[in-house]
Length: 306
Image 1: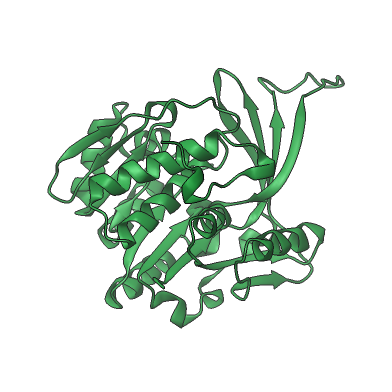
Image 2 (image 1 turned 135 degrees about the horizontal axis):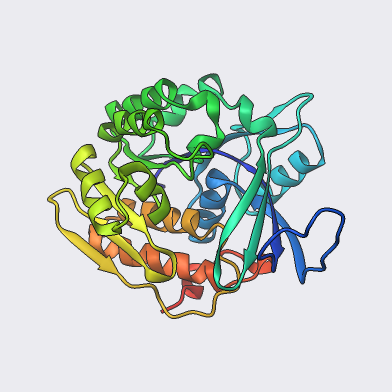
């Protein structure tokens, strides 16, 4: 079986909907639903890949609290090993609260908790000897920022892995120092996977295609900018650009769809699909997740939207 290592945040996601704005101080509003599930880039990608028939290695950490036990159980119940998910004593697990509403993008409040403890020492050396090594939730694992991630990507590449990076959103708002930090990592990345807002934050360009082309030129690799309901823009190594439209689905919950897209792309590329075909497959995976509820979040291959 093809070896995949996913490195990054494993945390609880609390999904609250609908929330278009927070209630004024001292008041209380009712919402339709508050749901809890395993979240974080590494966990969501892992759960997606498990439903697609693959068994990735997940590297992360949780706290020694109820949330931590919940996260480990969710991964194990999906057939995934938690041998590389460390339990950090005396620390709460990371929690991200996602606010969703029709007509607006999601927004998040996150407590790092144990995510602040994830460091290079928690990544076993043999985990980098995989066919694919993915680093996600970069800004939510501060001890891996910069040099440690660079070392991971370089070692993985030296050992023959295809490297993938999805930074997520920068809570500090993309200052020049952050742009330089990510730009230094890009030459070590075979496939870079930002969303439109992240690409704009990194490049200063509002146009997703222009941003994708700039990032591809800086990395020398492939770049896929995820556009949500508008699909994605993909730039191949030769500079060719393709826009893939989103599939027509009724959206139920968009949180985690980008990480699921990443997982679909990893799976397709490792199975030998062309880049264009892999992007199309990833788009199907992302759309399928958007159209599913928390109780049945991740599709099998037979359940993917056509």
